[in-house]
Length: 366
Image 1 (cartoon, one colour):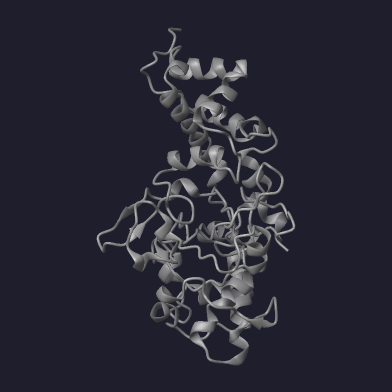
Image 2: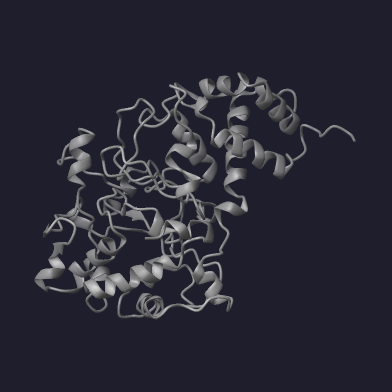
């Protein structure tokens, strides 16, 4: 068989297998103790299941003490997120990380290596050098990209990210085999509470589908349960995290406005709507992990639809919800639509959202 040309597209299966190896390799962190899988554990639907004294709200860096300020999102179904752009309504859509600062999945795959709060490598060249330490990696990259790949540093780093992204495009990241998917295919019958939660979720009573469906047809197959847009829903500060990561409660996470491609002050406090796939097993919730329970995150929306005193209290703390981190852009008009989300309704919706758990993670459901 003729040797693959350096100009030919790499074999997708071999590329994904190489990306899998890189994804789990701790040698791509400065202290050789943290891999991509540390924050995106396949046993926890590719989310961070570590406690780290911050109740799992944010991730611990490779230095053993640095804490981030945002919750690590699950990477299941992530390859279905569109690249960062503006839609025909001039609204920002897609992109990676909570603020879309990585326009593409390739951009995202390379950034954690050199983030000082994550894997903390000095620069891209240092990452390439770690690859070259491993003869098996060198052989694979030269086979897939040609013998000259390591003489082109920029292309070599791009090849590293391409291999990881190829792995993240494999079926294990998006099997569409949850109870809900089986229900749509006529292979599973929802329980009474699951059905009631489904009806509430898709009903105009709750307004969930405004942001959490891409295709508003209830029976749409392969629905990712996000419109990929950005909203400021008034999430309160995670005071515990701010005390631990030393940023302090006066610090404001400006969300989308921290994206270098965005300079409109009206975008402050907006974060990309996450997929609800596997949401029941990937808590804590919201961009800063401020809520531990899924039902709490749902009930939070009730503060906008009801003046009832109970709706203004966080059931996890027994205290008021707390002021939004960026108060000037909270989308009250959108959030106040629909009927009140009571505790009972929140529990039913959470029960339905459990049916969005991939089959391999159903054992994690409580």
